[in-house]
Length: 322
Length: 301
Image (cartoon, rainbow over all chains, first blue to last red; front, side, top):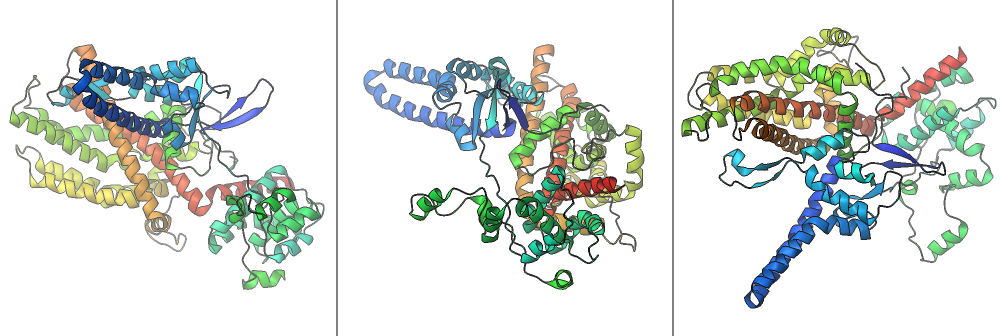
């Protein structure tokens, strides 16, 4: 049973010629199918509108109106995606709704030729096309696309590229909408006091710091019992190593260690901000003043609103620490 | 084994991303997943043929069918769909066991996998054959065997499928809990947590989410079965000039299309299970802390 070695994820790394690495999350068949469906609805809506206009003008112009309709149908069918992707920087309305964008595999915006070719080649990706007659319905028209060619090709490469993407060296990625979390707020002063009891010579490794940050960011979402259960794994050996009383709260110990790693050793300004609930990565004072004057939204986005709060002192563990 | 260095990136994902990454997993573990799925699928394929294949014996495959022949074909397709739906988790037991180990970069041999599954057989048999209705489904179709008309037994199969549907929508991860968490069926002094209790604890808080995900997966599964079977139909038309369903298509291609999709849905279910544990239990945080504890212990040594 052999397998590849790289981690299986939808995130990929693109390294520029300047040796700068960007991380993108590639959009797979599910998200792209949704975007396609939205675009299909828009196209059908436009065609319906054009059809109504044709019916109205058909009374006067006759065949010319029908010719106009056929031209509109042709343009929509073949160039809808290409035009939008060229002039909306790799997005169609459907892609914009789903938050995805077409880029080259080097992370650059696509050009008009790439947009046209990848959209024209969609007609291959939607193969094989079936007839209703195959299912016993007497209508010998091949109108049911299965998209199996596209799906198989997408499933067999890491960037979820369909045939059009492979030919044009493009890929579809998710637009980044992640907030960088600041330092988590520690409301409970016991964590800060406990930090003073930790041995000064204990080296917090990079992976330990990452694990602590991960724990403190997420612990607010867990129940008290689950928090104890999770913290116990690292808390127990740390307590032994530090020579602290065995009934010290593991959760508080990890918070104290987090405080040591990210706040206490960083400086007075960061410590003040964490105590006041501000992120050390917050905006400069001028920006804050502008926000206060109503020039910017006064509420900060997700990370600040979801800051982790330690529960007030309670239970035998807390009593032991204090 | 380093718990925080997993082969599949462990983090929270949305439904769309889960649908997408399942294709990656299928691609990376194509061969072992095919082998483990075949372990479950081949016996069921043969058994299903025994239970339903007789419906097509009298059907002559020409351009037009008589009403009776068409009725038998529809009956076969309908019953086969219900049966495969009910049996799907049973078929993906070995694949789930493989994925559980593959997450941590283990490369289990097939024999080793089976040896590990053997002690779990009673719990799995109880869950799938009895509780999830696989055995009753076989019995119902065995009772209906040979009847030229649609029978009450087959109508009961629909009710059974609806019951299985309810269980699968609100308790989807029974395979994962039984195989990966290795919980016993009955409570004992050594193991106070049982399979049923754990299932309730994991599933109950997120019933609405699970239902939404199940509906999404069901829709994708239906579309995929139609797509894969459509490809078989298309290939039969192009290669054999047979544009209508033939015995080969109905007896082999149709069930195989369904089983292929069962394999994909099995991977999707496993990924969704990991996601649920990450969201509700902070499983990824626990892994990181446990890995750090192991590193700390090795540093001290």
